[in-house]
Image (tube, rainbow, N blue to C red):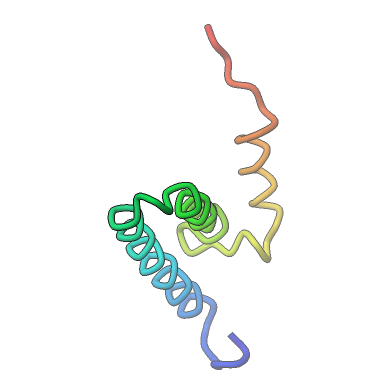
Length: 82
């Protein structure tokens, strides 16, 4: 934001576009490179994690309190099975 002198909304829109473009690239790689499937799957899984950090134009990387709630719901809190 400081380097480009833009608002947080503009910066998060740009990050979201990077994630979307990378997602398309990774999906194409999955289709075209079956021999590299294990490596591409790992990269794809990492890319999918970016959605957790920057979804809905909220920067959870910088504002870690919101990330803490998300991670607790995914890995700490149990899901009732009744």
